[in-house]
Length: 110
Image (cartoon, rainbow, N blue to C red):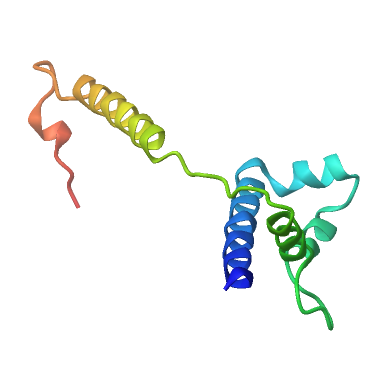
């Protein structure tokens, strides 16, 4: 049972790491590590006779060492999304047709 909990925690850590790499960019990580981009890509996938990828092994080690899984800030994310939605609504309100345009200019003709 304990092993299953560690595996679940490792999976969450791996998912978090992979998502951060995709957001920040694999090329930037490769430059920081002094590797080429293909080497970083190989870290993410098991190759040859390997059972686990290097990323999965690192995640298992971090879970075993007791690293807490990153919590996703849903409240903060929702508030940021709401602000973006409000901003989009403001922009759309500014782009509404004014009195100086003919309605034929706004119609989409196919």
